[in-house]
Amino acid sequence: DAGVIQSPRHEVTEMGQEVTLRCKPISGHNSLFWYRQTMMRGLELLIYFNNNVPIDDSGMPEDRFSAKMPNASFSTLKIQPSEPRDSAVYFCASSWYGGYTFGSGTRLTVV
Amino acid sequence: GEDVEQSLFLSVREGDSSVINCTYTDSSSTYLYWYKQEPGAGLQLLTYIFSNMDMKQDQRLTVLLNKKDKHLSLRIADTQTGDSAIYFCAESGSGGGADGLTFGKGTHLIIQP
Image (cartoon, rainbow over all chains, first blue to last red; front, side, top):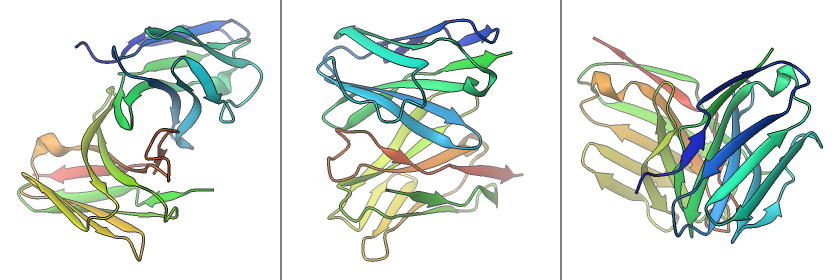
């Protein structure tokens, strides 16, 4: 298995632009999580899905952030419009009843 | 809410043992985890311990859990330069991780030659 695959690995965008981060979970995993990592706040859970259904999005910082999981093999995290304070590393993780696997992350820089 | 605390840095000499400590607040946590993050990489699960255990050993790694004090530690024996990384403690909450993990801010392990 190739593990959790995230794309792109790096994204540099201008303030105000839309950014879409992508994640392919491990086949057969029933849960998917989006985390954000910054120096100041560490790792924060943004949203998670069980069986493709969003369960808790209370960690999403603002309405500018949205996430979808249209099927069991794909999820997106969208920021529109992006702001410099959104600069961070965004991780996707998938899980089978608590056994987590993380992707390599997307480093987002908003200038 | 739940909170996980770790010291930010630990410096050890190559060949010595490293002990990374963590405290957590959610006494109902089912599992406690240690993850390793190397520069530019994702989080790699090192080991985990079930809350009804007080010790787990896996090769050079020893995890100790003091549930009464809500204290978790990771001991790395014979620390090598390849162990240089950020180590994250995480707790699962009562849901066993089904609703996400709560992470500490990570301990940077620095290896001196």
